[in-house]
Length: 328
Ligand code: ADP
Ligand code: NA
Image (tube, protein in one colour):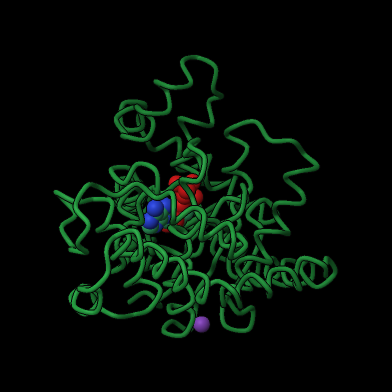
């Protein structure tokens, strides 16, 4: 029976937003307590599937490290490392790619979307990065992968790849399980029918965890709701105000019914400010910790270097076995 091990990754592009924090990073913090082995990777190799400026990328890797630590990831409890520094990720990616067919990759939803928007401009990496994700996970014989709904298809690819490898070379990889977060998808503040995302170009649509209290209040004040002034939770018919309730619930830990009951006397305009205040309260300590950590490049580099060493300690012996199974 495989040793329980968590793996997840985040791209070092921009600052995490409220959706990343509530939907992913908070659960990572919880999982580092629950699992004796947890790896969280800053997946810089994935980020170069779209053009990156080298100087900005280098800085973003450290900045993301600061953000993860400020959110509560603890280098004593989890391995926090930079993907590109463990070269076995790329090597295993090659081996696994040779086991997968082109149509299998071309059928992935994210590829269909991205190849539409990028036409023929994008690099081959846009098609093959899900294979690298398989390698990220399998390299450590990971058993549990916290994922958002948007990544479930890619985890299924990893599960299939593990089975294909095991069939060809003998039982080796555990088939990893998805850990679907219990928290709700956070929606864009300007279009509550789509998710809050780094790539949402609309101004004021996304709350970053580094936003000032003034920016947060402004963004919530401008948040799109509807023409009913009551506070109710009805995501299908009232996505805007329901997103407010979902955010409020996620930052306070109160359930949706309690929140709706508490808010009977408020109209949505006043309620948006209540939610903004709750978000500010949640993010204020995180933001000040980021500021503090950002200034200490030496410390951040140390965290990544020692994380890389620990990741290599795990990956090198596993990859040695893989080489021998494949016939190298
Ligand atoms: P983005 O779409 O903003 O670029 P990523 O794809 O880098 O975010 O996602 C990093 C993690 O954050 C993933 O686990 C993803 O499921 C989660 N996540 C992203 N957006 C949201 C959201 N709006 N609500 C909840 N979780 C989210
Ligand atoms: Na742990």
